[in-house]
Image (cartoon, rainbow, N blue to C red; front, side, top):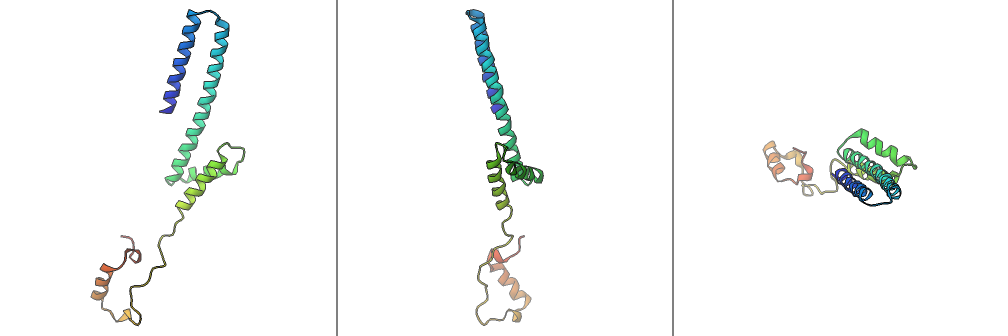
Length: 140
């Protein structure tokens, strides 16, 4: 969407410059100005393409794309890459988000001191399971 807006804006600028050249004098000076505007727009589009490519890789890596995740690490390690710092930040964030523990600990048991759960019948255990805290139940 952004590329379309930039391209449309460039087309309008170029159209205005051509109109000025056709109507007014100083064609060579205006052509030089127009050439400079085109060069600047081309550079801006190149920068925009780089930002879009980086963003696509980050989004893919966040969505479990291993190749994109590895590409971020490669860019982070390449200090000549203009996105090196941001790639490292993205890689670290994604790594942290995907390496959380599969279970939580630190909760207290449901048995009272001195109680022996081996004396329970299966029906008793089933009832206790229904009221047990979610963190000690396996995922459905």
